[in-house]
Every structure is written in structure tokens, then in C-alpha cells.
Amino acid sequence: MSGKIFWALLKKELREQFRSYRLLIAVIVFLILGISGPIITSLTPALLSNLGQGVTITLPPMTATDALQSYLKNMLQLAPLVFILLTMGCVADERNRGTAITVLTKPVPRNHFVLAKFCAYELTLLLSIVLAAAGTYYYTDLLFSALPFASFLLINLALFLLLSGSLAFTVLASVCFRNAIAAGGLAFVGTIALLLLPSFNATIAEALPSVLFNAERVKQLLAGTANAPDTVKPLLIGAGLVVIFVGAACVIWRYQEI
Image 1 (tube, one colour):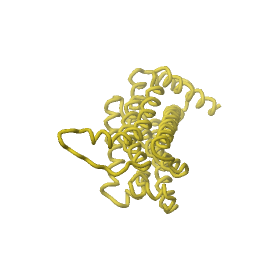
Image 2: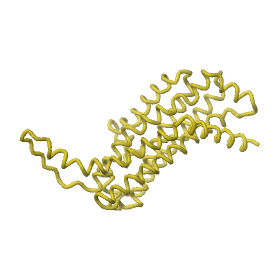
Image 3: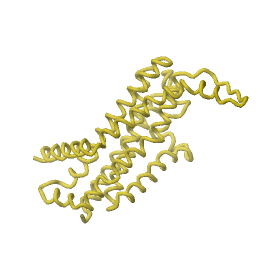
Image 4: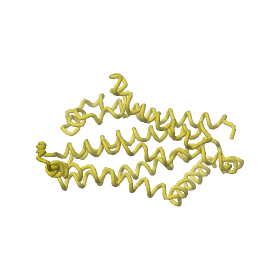
């Protein structure tokens, strides 16, 4: 019975994402971010050479690694903001409209209410990253050379876990506030902290999935020389953060006055 309720809520959330165009927006934005990385990288030398005014800028030949770095830069800077904007009102807006009370007056466990929302957006995130990664891989192969598939897959897994952490924190913020803008503000600050903290502390830097995106680690992954424990550890911690944020959202929502 409990499982049927969860699946019914999940399907409801997915339908709402489809009808409100959130799914379409996420897919289109991520696909653009994925495709633009290798294309802009390939055009950069030509663009710089046409600056004019007697300015001459000579760059070394662009490579597939440069295209990958451009893709990661796009995803780390813009993708979290997209999902914060899409999800910041997922619980807060329902509390304001009173629809949360309508759902919870039925025999619906509060945990299922939060988990269904997170899982629906997580599926949207997964689909969006798959399409962005596919676009990057195809155009990088077309314009430069093929990236090692296993390494590219691992890097995108780290990206998925990092963005999942941002998504989970946004759901937590939406549970804590009745106002979607306040929830989005907290989620934005939390995501910025998640991305910038590694810059200030070496221990934190080695513990988060973002460590796999620095230039040296990317080169090691592509060359197949990365240390396995140092690669697996941040992935596990990234997954753990997702569980902690979602678990906290469920606990707070269980005891919160609607």
C-alpha cells in the first residue's frame, strides 16, 4: 500500500513537471550547455584572431581536454542555478496554495510527499545530464577526438552527484521556508558554499565530488592514472550528502506545521 502511494505521488510530480514545462526547460538548457562547450572551444582561436586593432593572440591548439573543461565550467556555473530556480518552490509553493494540506489529509505519509518531489526532480536531472553529456561527447569527437568513455562517464557521475547535492539542499530549503524566494536564496548560498569551500580547505577539497573537476585530476582520469580510492571517496561522500539533505528534509517536514 505504501509503495503504491509513493508511485502515485511520483507520477503526479512527473506529470506536473511535464505540464509546467519544467522538464522541457531543464532538458533544453542542459543540452545547450553540453553542446556549446566543444563548439565554443573549437571557435575560440578564430574568434581571438579576429579581434583586430593590431592585436594578435596566439593560442596552443585546442584539444578534447579543453572541450571537456569548457563543458564542466558551463555545468558547474549554470546548471545548479537552473535547478534551484526550478525546484525552490516545490514544497513552499504548495504550502502557500494549500495543496499540501489537501494531499496530506489523505493517508499519505509525509516522507513520501517529500521523497516523491525529490525523486521526480532527480529523474529530470538525470535525463538532463545524460543528454548534455551525450551532446558534449558527440561534438568533442566530431571537432577534436573521442574522449575515453569510461573516464568521461565517471566525471559525469561526479557531476550528477554534485548537482544532486544541490538539488537535495534546495528541497530542504523549500521545506524550511514558506516563501519560494527565501528557499531559493538559501539554496543558492548553500550551493555556492558547496562549490567554493574546497578552495579554502584542502581536506574538504579532497572529500567532495568537485575534486574530480580540477584540471590535474581530469588529466589523470582521462589518462587512466588516477588513484582508485581517491576517486571513489568523493563519489561516496557526494552520495552521502544527498542522503543527509533529503533525510533532514523528511524529518523537518514530518514535524512541521503546515
